[in-house]
Length: 234
Image (cartoon, rainbow, N blue to C red; front, side, top):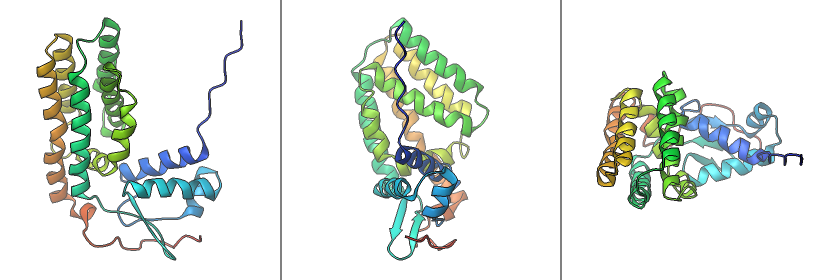
């Protein structure tokens, strides 16, 4: 038998980007935190160059601010960028859903399996990646899986608002219920109902945003982030 082709390993920059961005999204790196290139490189066991490149990409999403001669700081959640990203995401996901018909038996099994795993998720940390997987899968139904890259590039602040809001107004299982309504409607051939259910689901982020803003106003500080550590050596 022919030897299996080796799986391409992600680059050091990709690894750094994913880890740093995820820490910001999940609040492990809070607004105002100073991100040291040296410390990040040491923790990730890579050189500083891919860390610097990853931070430049993350800065383009508005998740960090690079200050010359000072360092790189995590920004506060920007409600305006949340709304912009939501507009982009909704436009892409609803248009894609409108372009697909009823899922094939294999596609429905795939979606039901994601729902099953979501039901087993006990908290937002375990649910969050499954939520991402579900929405990517919906785009894939109409052959638009590559559009997820465009969605992801725009939704850094939206992801932060979604993550902190997942336990603010609703339980994780409420989100799974939303997903199940979308799948049930698709499986029954009711595309319009699926679109309506998905639109309502996506727009819950606005209620979540206001709830979190009232409970944790420090996440939305309008002032420049305060220094909370040592500046990185550049």
